[in-house]
Image (cartoon, rainbow, N blue to C red):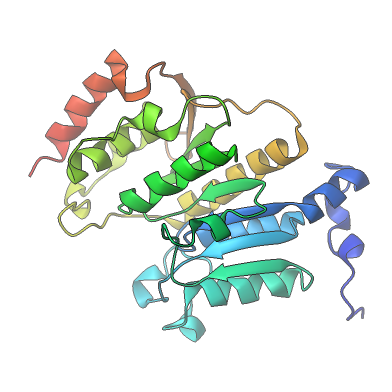
Length: 286
């Protein structure tokens, strides 16, 4: 049995869907992932198995029992352990050669330069309610010309957005500036999935609680996010195939068995989005 790590052998089964030269490009790429909970841990392990060789990862949280239903690193043996250190260890177990820079205090205005240093792509995995950090990171990526993606675990599906350098920015799409925190969260919800395929089978709406900043989640959704995002990251890093940037959005819902691409010029200023926001405000009113 082979015990020594060999990169070419470890990721040889990728060859065919990527060329040998492309696999080496993935080996040299660096992805930044902020947040290692529901979707972030899955993103890291998926990209590690794809053969991406370098990561900047951040999370200040520790694993708890309520993470068990969806988070890649959550299990009895990791309760109380830092998410960033646990996931880094898991990724290094896949690729011992991986260069992983840890930001165990999260991403802040003071360390964002280091977090985005040498980065080829940013994969957003921050908690839904961390709107301030998310706005900061997308603004910094836009300023630096770094491609940025976000995949939202919605019900039993995924909502995906791609912010391409030089195209529409996060702020121009969501229009969060000057809004209350609650309104920012609602606008983020509307922009993530304009078709809102998941809302028709939410059987316990009270589980979405803005005051307590919590909501329901599923492992199916998180794994769909990781698989879809990994594919789009591959396409972006290798310059292969089309990835539609905002104001395009994509939502796939496994429960409804539906796939929708939506074009919303003007983002949340679009008349269709304004109507959706009225519905969302009424659904989640205090």
